[in-house]
Amino acid sequence: MTRPLHCENLPLTDLAEQFGTPLYVYSQNALTKAFSAYTDAFAAQQPLVCYAVKANGNLSILKHFAALGSGFDIVSGGELARVLAAGGDAGKTIFSGVGKSEAEIEFALEAGVLCFNVESLPELDRINAVAARLGKTAPVSLRINPDVDAKTHPYISTGLKANKFGIAYADALDAYRYAASLGRLNIVGIDCHIGSQLIDLSPLQEACERILLLVDQLAAEGIVLQHIDLGGGVGIIYQNENQPDLAGYAAAVQRLFAGRPQTLILEPGRSLVGNAGTLLTKVEFVKHGEEKNFVIVDAAMNDLMRPALYDAYHHIEAVVPKAIPPFTADIVGPICETGDFLGKARTLTCEAGDLLAIRSAGAYAASMASNYNTRNRAAEVLVNGSSVQQIRRRETIEQQLANESACL
Ligand SMILES: *Cc1c(COP(=O)(O)O)cnc(C)c1O
Image (cartoon, rainbow, N blue to C red):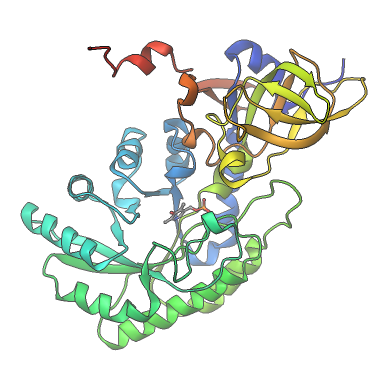
């Protein structure tokens, strides 16, 4: 038999046997390496790397990043609860997002987050009011929309004028003046986030230049910032993308930051976890059709939504390659939606009962899972060398039904 695919030292076949499928498998080593890529590239700046929890919020993954010295970027009170449960430091946690509720703001103030990344003037008012009610001062940074084109998928491009995110560049100085006029706010920083899955990093550099221009204008008005947050991380290789030039970007940032006292903050998500994860799935049936072949697997769009949501590509390969003729098929799940596909027109060799590895499934994968079609969410395991830990049990139907009642 051919050697099966491995995660670190463990064969994926063994993991499927032990934990069942569909199964998310993460490499701890890959998480560490991805984190070090940032701290190494930006070593001159000694940045605070705030892992974006929404990419993958599993408690063990958060705990691992916390142990590496990471802070966190959160977008909800729920994510703050995760960070705290994982032993993360609230003082290294920044709260992003356009729609923070009063309850979430109160929770974050009580926990002592590093700052709120504020996206509108009414949000400034709300944070000020909650802080006043609690007798506290709220640390704030304004998310400015630098109006540069990230050249990525429209659904994950966030830095253009037409997006719901951030405060318009032209309104930035007035927004800071307004924040300074509110008694319960402490202005600590500035931030931007222009989009995700960036391969060409020149828009990131351009955004940095535009943000630094504002930092200087603010300083001239006596508004001195403690940190500059350049937002999310670089893209990853899903298919045949070029390797983003992280070192080149870091060197540009270093040049632009020369002589500045501010702390650099980065908020990478995808690039810290994306290629550390594989979704392991079993072939249920191979269905040869007149026009098309289908490989029907036990994972579906509820487990991995990115193909359905963004038409995203994930590399798919047989865990144990077979000496049978390859054929071309769509890899689909059992869900009653035509959009329920994991890969289209893939050429591979497999039969019913075989295992497939869906690659680059560490980011925006398990964290986007749902119960659609009343499917239990998948289990997750973390591999470290030759050892494996289950970091999320497979959901049960009892858990799914627990909050419902048949009361009529
Ligand atoms: C999603 C998000 C990130 C993470 O982006 P990646 O592309 O996954 O690195 C960072 N900051 C904010 C505000 C986000 O919304």
